Image 1 (cartoon, rainbow, N blue to C red):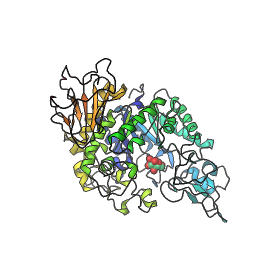
Image 2: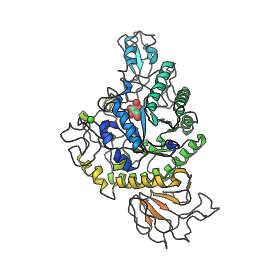
Image 3: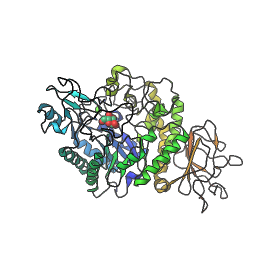
Image 4: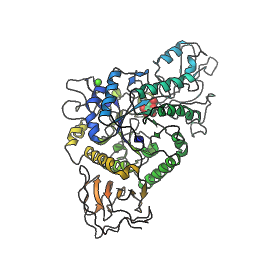
Length: 582
Ligand code: GLC
Ligand code: CA
């Protein structure tokens, strides 16, 4: 068993498994728990410390499992509860903590509560668990208000007796009424159900959306209203105080991790106060373009907001809801301002992957926890040419394809060359639930395993270093003076991270011994779109943090080799000026 005595959630490297697409054990073309169990050693060798599983519960899969029929049962496509329990134990034996995904905003329309509510009369206690309302118009033929579903179309669906129910997502995902105490009790019980089975953390889906203004007022959709009728209501905090009390009732560390999409960092940080969630995903960072000044601002803003509430920052580049960052970084506009998902034929995949490699070293060197979305360690791009009739995401279908949806980041992983599905399923299996591009043959994990220059090997090296560098765990970061297009900072006395986002090679500090770099280095230069971790000499006592200067390349010795397994600690010249006060 993993000792659970430290605040692991403050600095862990956490890997997101999307169970449907990770590995298929039984050959039906859908990933499952047997598949995950067979790959735990891969995760251990990758060097991650925790796994977050996207929902694995009983579900009709109208939204790929985010429509839950029963939080206490595993969907038979994935396996059984007994298998989930085994998986949790096995993961712990490998030193890997387990995080499960809980969806409080809504349940499936097949959940027992909703079936009962649909069959009950208007005004009944069963209907009070959801948001049932009469419609507008003479016959109640118009929805109760103009709210739109996040997945496209109206946020209301009518039931046969004429009432309407609210669903901020798909119609198969009716929103719960969190003012009803039964809802609170039930979810706290679900948390206990999984904590009792040993899970170390809960990822809280759509965490800022649970509470609604009961007046259900219309609002102007062209501006973000303040207050918003269903985003970030103060009542949410009360819900998570209750959840925190549940988590804290366990003697060891159980963490709550929120999916909180809010533009205002101060509002975001309120979810991370000492008696609420432990951490939340950093979508501000995820949405930031490949642009050094913008990233610097984003990192500072993140750290400032978190410091205020003494919560650890998180660093996220991709997940199951957004275009994979290899593709995003290969686009002419790298920020998600251009649309979190977009149709854009112009993608330079090699450039995107090169930047993604550098970005990995950036995120893993920043203070806090880091999230890795399955396949990112293989440098997988978004799959943008999935035929319409193979697409599954309700976002694609409900917008009539105007939004490409999220299937492209959910394509089953390529493991090796053993089967037609690149090892995702065993031989003779059904075809994978989403088609894999043939270009993925060369990106499979086994091939990358034997290639020291692969993305996989870079991730492993960096994660191994991250786990042993105590500065990366506890020490604050200090920016170094550097050209605008270079992000350079120290952690602790002798660790420096430098990322070059400019179009030109930049000089490396002359005392730096390379621990790991995202591309080969030569002549003491850091090429464009490249990141490096360096062992630098200790700062001179009294040095002013943030004022250390990167030295020009002249008269510096060439840096030693680059991407290697583990650190290559070359001798550091004793008299190097880097690290002195600038
Ligand atoms: C979250 C999930 C997303 C899901 C939605 C509705 O944003 O990450 O995948 O569709 O909530 O549950
Ligand atoms: Ca399967």
